[in-house]
Length: 258
Image (cartoon, rainbow, N blue to C red; front, top):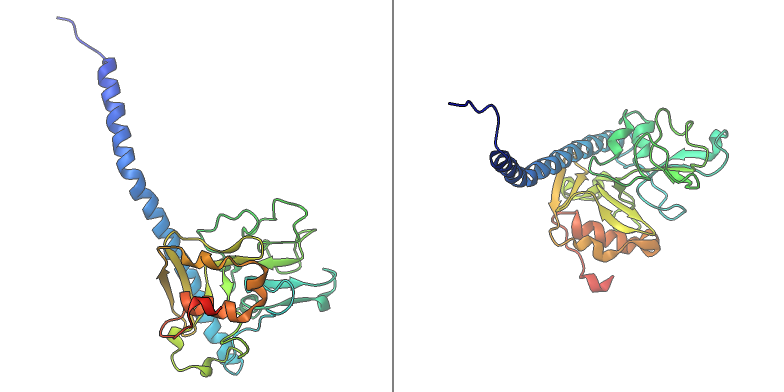
């Protein structure tokens, strides 16, 4: 009798087919696990930022970091603004969550970037791929001394809330329940691309009491607001977005009133 040393073609095809079926079954689960891991890491980033915000307010008469929302570039996701020559320290300044880094409450600026972010112009420690881009992600090392040759500001993927209730500044003691007021979220706002975020079903948000939480938005309603230049200059519109999608236990006006 002859002894067979290998597989037949049919047997090999059957094994390949079985592997393909298993991969088709497992891939969605693996993808979901990766998304969950990125979401959890993002939540940890924001929790660190929330706690840093509380520490900052403790040292600054109950005030959260200031952000120039009414001037260019005007987005709460900007953390460092360089308005003049990079070798002139008087023309450079920190704002918003960049102040948490400046005061060393956040020592690693990578925490200002959502792990789910895939925007090539907003990557931590990488210059924008377009050399003409005047803004981009946080460069490696000290800020803002090592900005790229064409970079004029530092932008992150976490949106920092501009104001409480339009013109009222963000004093911690200006509201009763600090666990209901969000001040940072993994939402990215851009004048040309509108309001976007980095997770499929919602967003993480950091709250004034120092905790973070995931808020579901299964219908992607936040994208209805579009962002754009109007969003950046209209405080009432921004205020509505934060109350509608991030704040808890807050009564907000209907969408059509904005």
